[in-house]
Image (cartoon, rainbow, N blue to C red):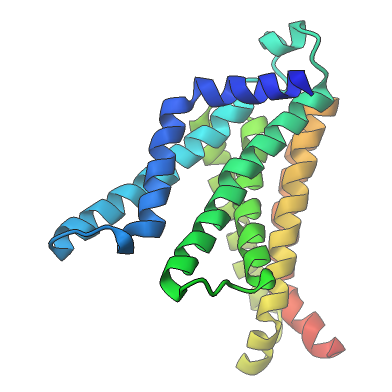
Length: 244
């Protein structure tokens, strides 16, 4: 446990300034209605700036957390120390989940409490927000585990995303049309399945990279995840319609 805390503190301390800027941007986005500002132009400028800070620094921080102790590079310092791969992957998943999933959901909770006088969202809404964030964050972490820097990580993730979208668009040409009502009825279930698949495949890639160190298998898992989400996006409505 002491070693786990030491690894957590090491990553937090190494990125303390970036994390501080990211946290300030996040706090402003969720609490901007409580900040007295004169003029809509200034408020809009600060809002856009905060969004850019949160997104850009968020991508960079997730990539850095993983790639600073890269799972497959032989010259990484952590592999020369008495640190097991299981402990390291636990630290990385815990750190990324706490910062980029738990903190934003907690910020939503605080903002809603300010806006609604203490009336909170239902547990299902918070669970959905957590699932959405987990899907994005762990997909990004999985791509980081398969690349050497943040630029390559972002290129891989965007390539998989656009590839899945292109495959879905192509497959839709060969599927019969269903009514808009049926499509909307299946929409939420389809979204939950896609988000869950993204989280599962992302975690599978991270675990494979740290525990087994098989990059080819990890790339295969990423491709399988992208194809699976495309297939669900196209065919879930028909499955829902014929089994309702």
